[in-house]
Image 1 (cartoon, protein in one colour):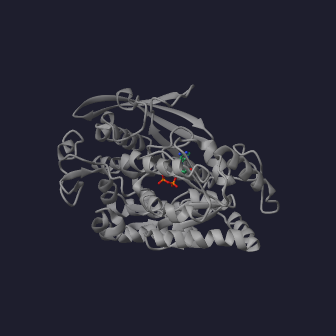
Image 2 (cartoon, helix red, strand yellow):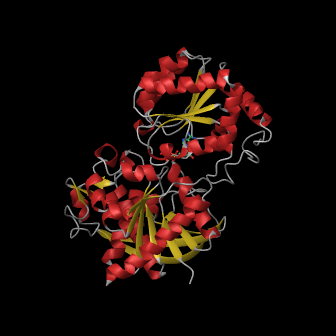
Image 3 (tube, protein in one colour):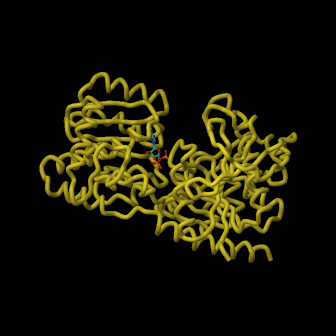
Length: 463
Ligand code: ADP
């Protein structure tokens, strides 16, 4: 019998991506299907998603204080069966989430999405519903409430985003019965993320190191207590990367291809990037990231004086918080030949920077897995990282522990020195990184094993 999984997510390529979740939902689903299990992917039909020739496959009336009609459409794309949940009043907006007023009803938007996913999984007799992050976590609780035989699997991609809403939302969400400290209540609020943790058979997060970190107050964001209770059901599975999309041998988004046998293409990529960024000094140090406290931008800003004194060039591609962005722009203004900040979301530029840079910097405060350091390794760009979460699990050479500018500057300084003084060693570092295997094959296999455990538990726990 073929295992049948419904992957529930608020983001997936090729339609919607604000961060790593968009990459991972798509590439993991692809990898699992290649392993011979059937994984379909369900996501909201955001207003900006433009698809033709979809098939209507159902409709549900969902009660959330009042009745909302929801329609489901499906289409096979890139070998995956996508299912779209359409509720124009909730999803026909410019963006995806955001802090703006227009997203004040996120509890209702993702409550409805989660309920539709649960109804669909139950109706179609999926073996497992695999929910991802807070936006889809309630689907697990709704399955339980309908006493569904579908097994409940939850992955935490970022524990700092929890979907915590005012207590009164428990009523329209139909969760008054579960609104208590052993259920969905979290310091007086209703927490979607906590529902995922409490009501799933298996919980995973996206790297082994992070699965241990989130049991501590430093990294647990208040969920450490409830996670410790469930530590025997918690696993860390390292994310893989899409090695078809991220392949320096054959990447349509960069002008020159290269491999470990012939690195000259990387030099050309670097020249192009220097021209584009109009910077002067070498090595080129790059960051591609949401500009958020998580990613260590406060530490970077504190360290910039020391870093720029190394006479290097710094390229940052990122969108995010204006206060940090403003400070980075000030530094850029004062150091025109050494620093460039691209404040856009640009997939093509991301590939060009990963290919053309020498060093990739990731001084994260916390990092559940992180994808860009793996892209960097694959493109022969040497990462310098803080030893947390997935960064600790994927990077061997230049990493620092303390969240302090001395530690960052010292480690980056060592990398710059090696780049300048020991060409042979640098080339070996490049080649070693490029030879690493970050494909999904191994990790997707781990998910299959955990899916099997999840299904067995559903049956046993039901007894
Ligand atoms: P997170 O999910 O915490 O944002 P990850 O490293 O897991 O961090 O994933 C981030 C993804 O978003 C990567 O694929 C990265 O290339 C991409 N990304 C982030 N910012 C930008 C940007 N400004 N332009 C293009 N891609 C970006």
